[in-house]
Length: 178
Image (tube, rainbow, N blue to C red; front, side):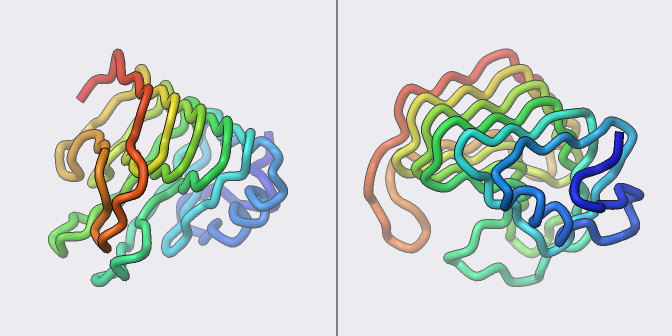
């Protein structure tokens, strides 16, 4: 199966622009097993109802030394949308995070019905961070292969820039191997 939108998937070519174009369509994103999609400097903004699936790897090898405090350092960002699913994707960040920054596999803000399941998080990746106004999230049967990035994060209060709107509710976390 061919990677989405002319992404090469060889782990060397920057596939960030091709993946961004694919995600912007709102269609499901199939990441075939055996492909590695390099996406340095790219964060995929998930659309409502979108599904990311397959055994393919999303890879980052470079993390900016300074990430703006209002920015999210994530592979997939789920903001104010309903029904996003991430299933069976491998997330890998090969750079050691000695800068105080974290790289997240999936971040969610104001999301409803988010499902992250059967994924692998390798290297210095914090798997999932859920904050502000998220409801009915399920984080199940994921595997974290390294402790460099931390575990799962749930912020039921505010954020780093002083926002305090909305709690995280009805979140189910089960069967994860850390």
